[in-house]
Structures are given as C-alpha cells and as structure tokens.
Amino acid sequence: MGVAMRSGHQPAVPAVPDRTTPGRTLAGRLPVCGLPAGRQTPHNPAARAARGRQAQRQGLAAEGRVAQALAQAGWRIHGRRVRTAAGEVDIVAERDGLLALVEVKSRGDLRKAAEAISPRQQQRLLLAGAILQGENPDWGRRGMRFDAWFVAPEGQLHHVPDAFREMG
Image (cartoon, rainbow, N blue to C red):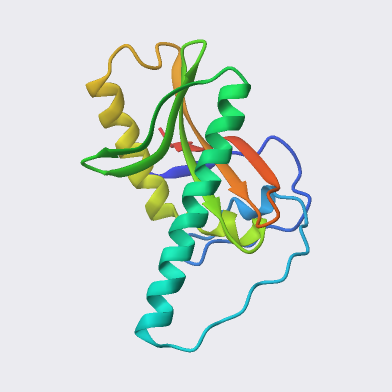
C-alpha cells in the first residue's frame, strides 16, 4: 500500500523530497514563509523536558485553532486526539457526509511543519482512518479524506485538503 501526494496546482516553492521516499512531499504545496528556524538548546534532560512541554502546549493550541476554523466552516468535530489501534488522529471532522481526518503540525515555519508529515505517518493515518470508519459506519457516507493543517508561530494557518491518499 503506497501513498500518493495530492497536488492540484503548481507549488509556490520548490518541493523538498522526503528523505525516505523520493518525490513525496507536502512542503512543496506551501507559500514561502520566511520565518527564522528557532534556536537550538544545548542537550540536557531538563531543557529537553521543558522543550517537550512547550511543544505539547503549542500543539494543543494549534489543534484548537484548527478545530475552531473547521467548526466555523461548518464542519462537525467528532473528536480531537482520537486514539485508534494504529495511533492518534489530531481531529476527526465531518461535513455533508465527507469525513476528514486532520493532521495538525505546528513548527517554526510552514515548510518544516509540512516536512513533519512523513510517509510512515501517512500510512499510520490511512490505517487509523480505516479503523475509524469500521468502528463508526455512519461517519463519512460520502467518503473520507486526509487533510493537513500547518500552523506557523505567528498564527498563520495553511490548509491542504486531501493532502494524501492511498494508492490503489
């Protein structure tokens, strides 16, 4: 089972291939952002734990912003941080019978956020989607798609609908 990257238009920036799968990238579908990459902290366990807590808070805030944007656009939120045997889905939403499994990434810039959705993670989300549809047969009667939302530190949101899909 492979994953096909969706692209409905020419990217605003050249694509940076994923290191594990040539030609597979979401980063090429983003506008140029121009944000600094952020500071690196020297390795020590306390600093690493603090960075982890900060990243978790930022991730929760980003997911909240995306869930709010989806709700304002008429999507019904079935759940946030929905756990399946295949792993966690950040947001599960539905509108007009279309189920969207949403992956939210928040990084120092939008390109880094897009690069964070690896082919392995895409496969995990595909499996999670199959599990959720099996457990909830009333969800997604008109189909299912996988959306990516990228959140930059200043709050800029970028939505890539139908970001990837299973190859037949």
